[in-house]
Length: 222
Image (cartoon, rainbow, N blue to C red; front, side, top):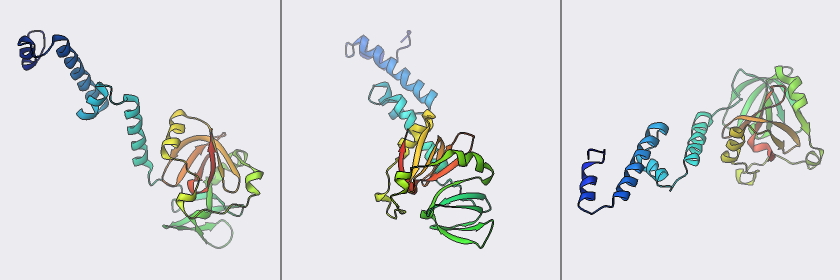
């Protein structure tokens, strides 16, 4: 007890019910649990699993950062009413104007020229600030082999290209340059800066932030 061992543990050692080495190991483990709780904000049960080697600390912290990113960005969208945008639409259309209203399945978009349009969200492939059009034009290429397939928007989520949040978050944390190809062959390369349930923003060369809609993904790779 004088050397810092809890009384009950010291008594168990003194009575031969617990080996001294086992007691010291348990004390060291308890100290590590306390440090994990203090330094990383883990609850005691999870901290104990890490201390006993039953859970990997790096993986635990990575999952927490992923969870935090999801919570902070789940509903984030570039489709904000009143925002000036350039929208890449299916049919190889590029329209520039102002987002008037964001509804559940469609948006009302007012082009700089012409009448307001009702645009179904599945028709939107990508979006960016019109002021960054020069950088965006350089950043967005075309894959003719994909474009020639005439792929249409895919209504059912289960039939779309699968790119999980975990995969996107790894790219984001690694600051990896990735290439996203849309169903119509638009090719955007950049570093992911955020993603939500429906969108993924890439910082392309020239500092243009280009948002690609996840329902329009045809392929994603480093």
